[in-house]
Length: 179
Image (cartoon, rainbow, N blue to C red):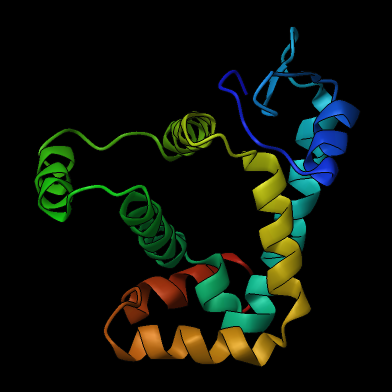
């Protein structure tokens, strides 16, 4: 992070363990910099978290919803909108942006996921938040609760109409070898 940020001792230790040099400013905030890009080992840790989350999704939502790209995209949109809201942004502008994006050609999913990660890092930096720390904390928080808690929350969203079409869920199951 290049903007000064208040860090707990746990966050500071985490940043330093990941190779950041953190310099305390006169106001008690820190500026942390890293000269080189993240080491491949860092990506391996995120891939391990991704596998943990995939298993949790299957347990909480069922294999069809866990492996449905459309369903996972819908839930990702929900979280992106919640982050947008938490950042104090205008709902009217969000509606305009949806129309703007859908008027353009469809992108490639892998590239768009990379860009989503990049913009998440940029937002976290602007807000003086460690994206990696918060991601790890959220995975730990979710895994600490009974899976039934999230199954019920997901069902409420499904009942409200926020679920991929049945044909998409069935296709996802078949492609995963479960149908």
